Length: 200
Image (tube, rainbow, N blue to C red; front, side, top):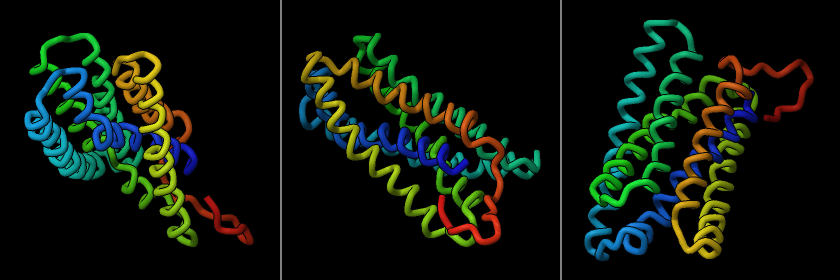
């Protein structure tokens, strides 16, 4: 269960890292924005992501009250949000910069809406190993932050295009959805067996 959460967090971090490390370059090099324009435009998805994150909290809590199911309350927003994030791939199929900006805003809103990883950790971490579980969760995100800039740089270097980079991060969020449904399974408190060494 926890391994699935860590995999998903790695994948979500890949999308976040793209926006932090490569999005302004994408706007300038692939979409021919000026540096000033790119600076202003790059702020818009972050604003949308902030709104998405807060909205997901309300929506997830509402679902929990309505259904009494942690699985539904956490996995449904994650699926909706990260599914929306995957639309970043559609930027490869339009030449209209306004459409690209709209897609990027929707993708980062979705990332915020689907980024309930810490909530799921709070629901699942063994009481005896909450610190370790949180540390491994952060480490998974850090791995995504390490590998993504390198991978995107290599893709752009070899292809001369950002299309593969957008496909890379878009597929990562789809893998995150799959991890929650296929690997995590039922969401609930992980209980260590008697005598078991605290681990994730």
